[in-house]
Image (cartoon, rainbow, N blue to C red; front, side, top):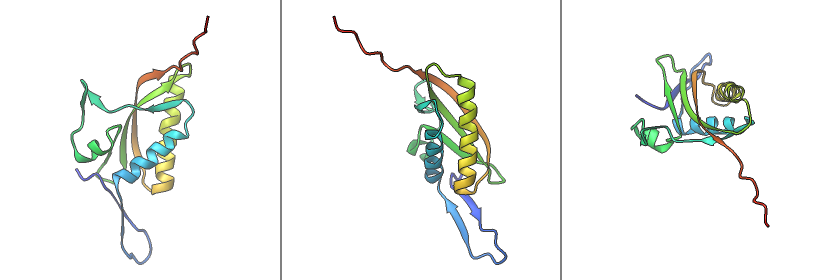
Length: 131
């Protein structure tokens, strides 16, 4: 599967094609996640401690997976670490909406599906009291 998303310019006289790499889309996704309150970070996609997808693109950004369907819409898979104390489904829904909007807005590509798995919670360390 070609991980680059192919976009065709939609003008009255086509002058060329635009290709957006999966690395560029991954950067947009990471930037979008940075806008969502409550996301601590991404964790590598894994199966039993081994990278779940062995494509070259998956090795280049093992913390998320991007694939395009036949119509060119994207499917994004994320494993998130959420800040402790927040409502998990609210943060996940915000992540999905923000990723969809930013990819559409910045890359001009529709996101068909965003799959979010919450893999952990980040609890800030409490300062130790000295005696």
